[in-house]
Length: 389
Image (cartoon, rainbow, N blue to C red; front, side, top):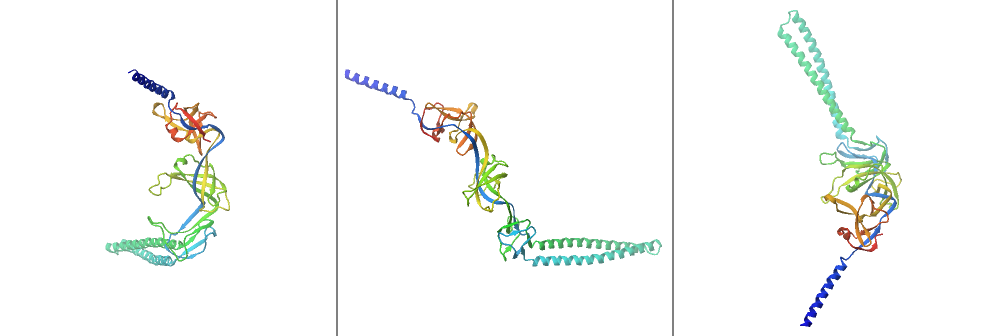
């Protein structure tokens, strides 16, 4: 019996010692990466985008008439002047229509001249009838007949004049259609694309069916980079900001540029899977002989710049519930093995860093890993494993 009591007492004492030992240990500290807030003399925030080089002024020449290309006077790369003849379409149908319209105008002009003569004759007959009626030598019925004949001649002459105006309008329309069989350049420039050959048919555009593009004439004196910027970044851009453009064909060369236009509406979404909206942004490039329209490019646009900014790694900035149901932005400082939440004001983002206001330079902060930061609370024990930088 005494031995049994001794065994029980030993087990109780062991259990009490285990509980006390566990209580003394507390929760195990989380392994975290620690970094220090640092001051960057010049902290820049960039917006990146991709696109292609385009001429600042260009025109896609279509056709306002349908027909076969019977003559091409230029080839791709040719310099052209405003008003220069570039191509000619088959003009036989249009020339026939113009000749028929001109003949119609001439015929109606002759008829109108004859009608005017008949109107004058009817006016003279009416004046004679009125004089005879005043002298009592003409019955009233014949006077009314003379007046009716004058009115009919006048109406016929007016109708023929109106038909003549209509025929003249048709002749001008036919002449305009004939002139459109000759394609001329609307500007000085270079033929940067030739989309047709002699003998091919061209059509005019109708509803839901675009017309044939014959060629593109571009002014290569000034070139732009047309890039597509994500909606998350477009509000940071404005006209006048500087940028650098890198060509896919010349990755080692950076071309200075500046923002000259920021799209005011999103570009059409292509495909059902596309969720993010993009905006068109134009960058004016410095002139250079190596640039050609159609070259693909990447652009870095300087969205903002700060002097002596205090920065921390981007992933170290977290959101935590605040007073009144809102959220607070802050970081966790590393204070002798304990994580302490400190509220900060986030500024501009530059690469993998972000500007913060309300934190002194040199302060040690918890910089990762992301999983630990997501679940971390103020006062959690932590231990440093490796520097983030």
